[in-house]
Image (cartoon, rainbow, N blue to C red; front, side, top):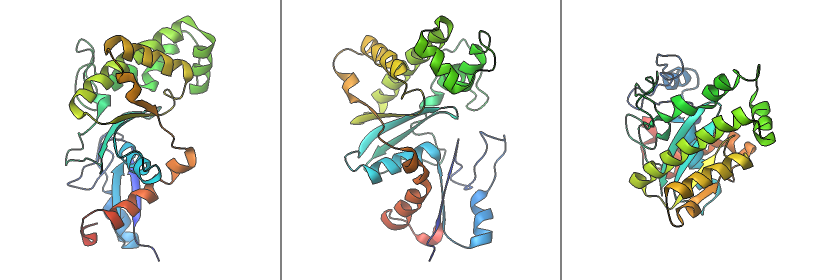
Length: 244
């Protein structure tokens, strides 16, 4: 028997309309209603990074109070988990990717803010800048050049680490979670992680850097995130299943 369906999506979730896509296509798509028309089952829709936070708590019980930061080709996202996932109607909690870093830069097409973190150092932005020095770079080639000590690539990625360190410290000062969990392509790169921790130590004295943990989530566990999301909401959250 099928009890329900879990759906995760990049970008902003409209919790009032139960729709997705405003960050991706510039318009909203009521995916929940479309799925319910076909299957007539409860449907849970959530942002991808927030669903990763739920998976962290479900699979690794020692993580119950944390701020998750995800950095991949799809963007920069954040989620706050304090014994439960913290959410609000406008999906703004933990959105580290859209904190303002340099207001002298252009407006971000997604958050409409000047010089937010994602508009400055998303992997797509870094690749675009890197292609001025190397043609048709892939993510893997970008990391290869970084690990080899390519000067221009190292400048770009170290700048990213600098901005990321500032954003993590500033966001944490408001959230105040026990742990800071990092997940995604760049964080798993040894040189980038070293650069990030170096900037963290430069901007925040003391042992703050010890709060930072690389995510243990494996690829196959990430693929289970929609299932875990549905299980969590259908069985463990204090909600009426008929509302889903």
